[in-house]
Length: 461
Image (cartoon, rainbow, N blue to C red; front, side, top):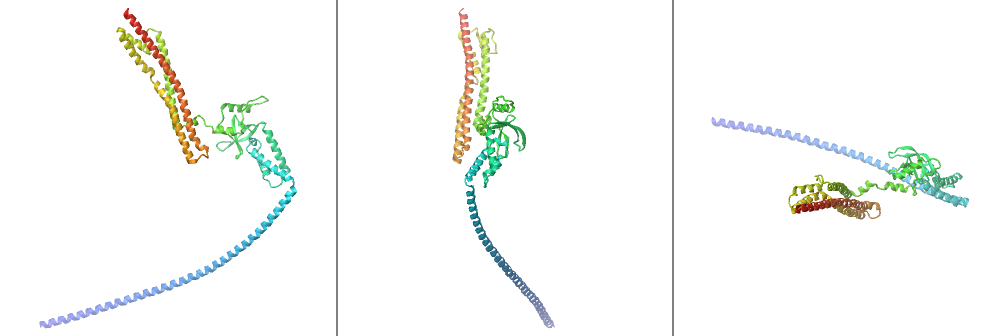
């Protein structure tokens, strides 16, 4: 019975396993069918995309062919235009050559017709050009504007000058000659530094100078106006200009002119003043000036104080009562404190009192002497530095432009001048102050010797 049951269980198990195998086989078949459908779809999609790309490429190829045909037509059209332009250029060159030949023939006919007048009018045009160069830069043109245009038209004309042009040339030439010997007063516009203009009463002395209100002006041909000089001449020159401007009647008035027609006044503007000269000395120049100023102040102070001390000492010589306010009085007080001692002790005490006064008298004199000796050495140092700068400029830029070397040369010369200017007064002040100090010391020694002599005589008595 038990064996039967086991056999039955085995059979059931076999059937169940067979059923399971069957079920598994059915699922695998279903999955294989789904996979086959998906690949078909992919294949169909690839085929559709290929057809789409092929159609697009065919469309692009058709467009490229159409554009190529259009470009070929445009190229043919441009080539035809170039050929037509070259043909027109060739025709125009022929016309130009024919015209130039005709112009040459007409010029020859004109030269034959003009005859001797050609040379005459050539001389007139040359004279107009020369006169225009003179009139353009002349201050007389500020009183008579517009002459430049007339002369320019005559000098640049290609035709025979007209009678009016020749008369204008003659009148302007005579006017220029006549106005060069006149002093005239007129109203004109003066350009200011800020770009504005103002009307002024101008006084002109020939072609030499113009001034307004005692101030000299310069003429700017490019502006066609007058301008005040940035830097006016010395006061005596401007005063002379003011006297000429205010003169009336036939009286003689002394004035000043620029025979170089304004160039000297321009040089006056470029001439550096005292401050600019000092700045050319740079650092060494300023050191020399500082040393000179300090030494002069000390020298004047010592000279004045020593002179006053010498006067006080001479006054003390005439008085018997000693005073502490002067060196001799202090020496006499030292004697009064030791007059009971012997002669040698008194002499030593007086010598000690004099030695105490000498440093007060000579204090500062050596410093003045040192500054007087150092100032030329500083000037020499500035000279060497200036020459070094000059040679450096020559090395870098050459010698073509003198203004490049001017800075170093100015530094060299200005420091030398400043050193000498500082040393000379310092030496004089030192000499005066040292002389006053020696006179006071000499008085002290004389009075001390007299006091010792009187003390010795009193002791013997």
